[in-house]
Length: 283
Image (cartoon, rainbow, N blue to C red; front, top):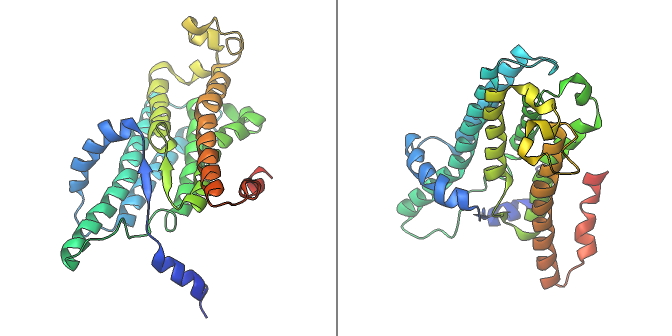
């Protein structure tokens, strides 16, 4: 008897990848670029090899950061922040090319089989790449610490937890939603597209102004927003943390909960039982 039982094997045979991206940036800006860039990789190259290349970009970025700021308590040279932004952009490109590669394989199989395939038949993301996604999450969190000059004190404080929280909650919420919908649903503004764009834009911006810019009061760093009563007197990185929580994580989690509740109610299921599945993450 194998590690996966007969029921699990039968479920694997029935599995079909399903995903939809409602992002306008991805649809009208990035997808035309990805469609042309995917031809760089030969058809014989496995999709998982493309994912590994993206992960190696992050590892190279982590190595550079460790060489110049091993304890995250000193600001590295500005070109290091630029390198972080560039390598993260390449990671995003490679990560989405992974799914484009799956589409290429599907079309190739259609030609070989002489029949139409129903959807994307290769189970790629939520199985083989789950561990890599978690590792990407941890590495990206470290890059955020370095770019905003947190220092060793903040790394040990509650601010470190909230920056990890910003990255982890959307990932967990998407996985929880996928369990019920059997589809990866990316909203109009989502982490894999706009979220990563925001992060590597911050890296490029930090390369221009220096990491010290983030520790000044928000009202001084951004004078035209000094009228804001709550955030103007706190450090810029804390203001950015607050704004990301309100306008980034909040709408994302609301979308996850809304989609799950609609599906559970349509099947006459228990909404409370579905929400209870989030409790282990809270603990």
